[in-house]
Image (cartoon, rainbow, N blue to C red):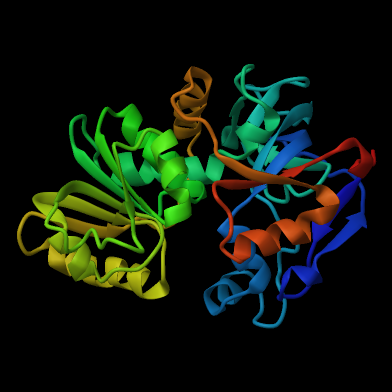
Length: 326
C-alpha cells in the first residue's frame, strides 16, 4: 500500500509517498480501505511545525508522528476483537490518523455509518470542519432558533459548515467573507453576506446574539461591540493574536456584564456529534463545499494550496485507481 509520510518539518516538498505494509487494527479498531480523505489546517501545522506543534509532536527538530491526515471516508475491511458496532463491508466516515494512505486504522468510536446518498468525497470533507462548527455553535455558543448569528470567515472549510449548521437551527445568519466568495455564502443559505473588504461589521451598528469567528482578525473589543448585551462570542481560529485574546482576555471580560467571550479549542471527536452530522448530511441540511480534489500522489500540492489560503471550502485527497497498491 501507499502512504504519505514526512520525517522533518518544512514545506509540502518534504512529503514522501512510500510503499509499506497494511496496518493491523488493535482490538478496538477497524482497518479501513480509504476512499477519500480531506486536508485540514491541522495537517498544515503538523507539517510546517510552528513552535507549539513541535513541543507537542516530538522534539523541536523532527516530528514523532510521521503520518498525515485525519478526516476519512472508506470501507471497513477488518475489525478488531472488541469491535461491536461495525463489520467488514460497512461504509463509514470519521477520524483516522494517517488517512493520507490506501489503508488506515481507526477507533470504532471515532467512526459512523456513511449515508448511502452521500459520496465518499463529501463524507471525507466533513468530520473535523463540521465537528468544529457544530461544537462551536452548539456546545460553546448555545445557539437557539431565531437568534442573529454572524460567521466570520464563512467561505473556508469550517465556515461553510458553520453557515449551514446555523441555518439548520433556524437562525438569521450573516456571513462575512471576501468579495469573490459572497455568492458561495448566499448559496449556503446565509440571510446576509458582508464583504469584509468594503464593510467592517464591528462598526456598522448591528449587533448579534452569537458571533462565531473562524478566520480573520478583529480585536476582542471589536467583537464585543458587535455583540448584543447578552451575546456570545466564540473564537475557533484566525490570527494568533485573536486566539490569544479569546483564550486569555475573553474569560476576564465575561465576568463584566452578561456577554460571554471565549476560545473553543480543538474540536473533540465525539461519536454522538458525528452521528448528528451524518443525519444533517443525509437530509441535505448540510452539503460540503468542495473546492478541488487531488490524487494521493499529489498530496503535497493539496497542502500547498490549502496553506496558501486559496481554498473555498474543502480540499480532498482521493484514492484513485492509478494511485492504489494493495
